[in-house]
Figure 1 (cartoon, rainbow, N blue to C red):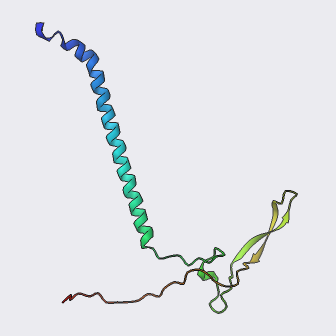
Figure 2: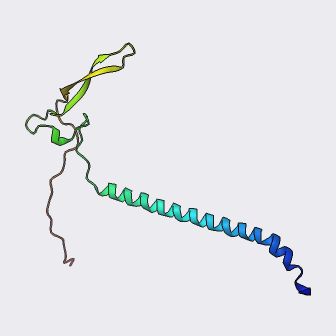
Length: 121
């Protein structure tokens, strides 16, 4: 024990510094792993969104299914304000047919079957 007297202050005071460094390292490592997980989730959601075809939504914000095939008019029912207060805020609404005269959204492409090419000579 005569040669180990210096060990007592190191254990009492030095272990706190070592503990803080270990704690800082593990916190940084944990934050880095969380950032990697979030980046992977963002990547997966972006890939999923990229693989979806565009939604056929018209300028009136209604789907292509709400527009007639023969005339293209919108058949959706919307609520329009019918009574306002002094500050021009709507107080009462009534239902009407959408005023859209023709579908102007993206035209969906038909599904095409093409057999895979297996012989690449």
